[in-house]
Amino acid sequence: MHKTDILIIGAGPVGLFSVFQAGMLGMKAHVVDSLDMIGGQCAALYPEKPIYDIPAYTKISGEDLIKNLHAQNEKFKPIYHLSQQVTSITNDGKAFKSITSRGVEIESKIVLIAAGAGSFTPNRPPLANIEKYEDKSIFYMVKNRENFRGKKIAIAGGGDSAIDWTINLAEIAEKIFLIHRRDKFRAAPESLSQVESLEKAGKVELVVPYQLHNLEGENGILQNVIVADLNGNEKKLDANILLPFFGLATDLGPIKNWGLGLEHFHINVDQASCETNIPGIYAIGDVSHYEGKIKLILVGFSEAAIALHHAYSRVFDGKALHFEYSTTKGAKGL
Ligand code: FAD
Image 1 (cartoon, rainbow, N blue to C red):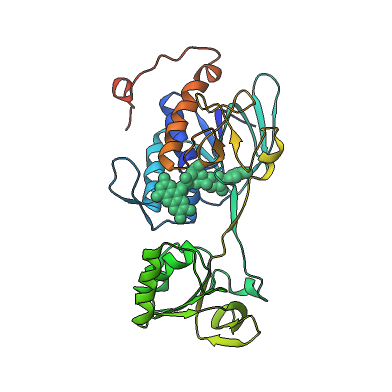
Image 2 (cartoon, protein in one colour):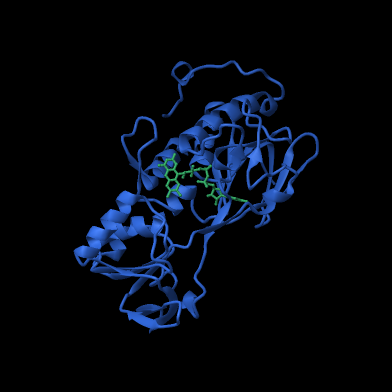
């Protein structure tokens, strides 16, 4: 049984900043995440995209933001438990006892839920033998765009991700086939006119209205993507990479069963403290809700500070917090 001050569920940007805030207040943290890496949406969904609204950065990529948050936390030596969820939480009146899906037991004075939209898994197109190609020729996320240089890429989907990656990868790909089952896309007009120009330049071929139908290749290496229109007429695209962007299935997992009064996948909190309906359990970042809530990283950072200042007296057995600026108290080793 690990013993700690605070158990953080979710290692997205908000969970990571909570480690730092907790450390500055003298609290030790363990962090559990269902993914096999830290960084939440920033690391998993848009590592190379620039974020423009992180204070004091004109822009910073999702990946660099996470690297910086991780480095900022090093001094406080958080313990990460990745590839697992917290399955149950009980409270004996003195502490919370949490057990993860890998059997790790953690006792903590408070629990901070920073689970975002929940654990996310991409929606897979229903294609025979798709698993043989996954992570070799079929990818649901672009972690490193350089891997796609010079390739013939089929991008499937009709929303922002499909359009954004078509524009982004057209710079380095040999050719892009953009497949959508309708002839209209759901994306910003400026982006659509960029795709039009790329089509005129011969960099992008619009394959509409067509749906993914079959895959041809060997040993996970894709040779052709077969698409079909609504009448069943087939077309062969000589693409060696397929990027399906059909959205994400999100699931808060066992959190749904903890009596936190979830509404539409959100946990209602008291905005003044970010505490849930269970004293000692806090919710911050994308997963939390109150009137006027804005789902932005910087809002989540602020909620981390609010929750942990509120939690101080619970963590330190009723001791009142003497508020100090970081410039006043300093942070040895930083
Ligand atoms: P998340 O980043 O979602 O992290 C939550 C973590 O909790 C995940 O790692 C997940 O695996 C884990 N988790 C969930 N459920 C469980 C469970 N039951 N057990 C264990 N672990 C669990 N925001 C901005 O401010 N500016 C932007 O420019 C911006 N651009 C964006 C672009 C895109 C394409 C997307 C998708 C989002 C963008 N956002 C942007 C939104 C931003 O990414 C989110 O607001 C932010 O990631 C929320 O952080 P979080 O830590 O609350 O949750």
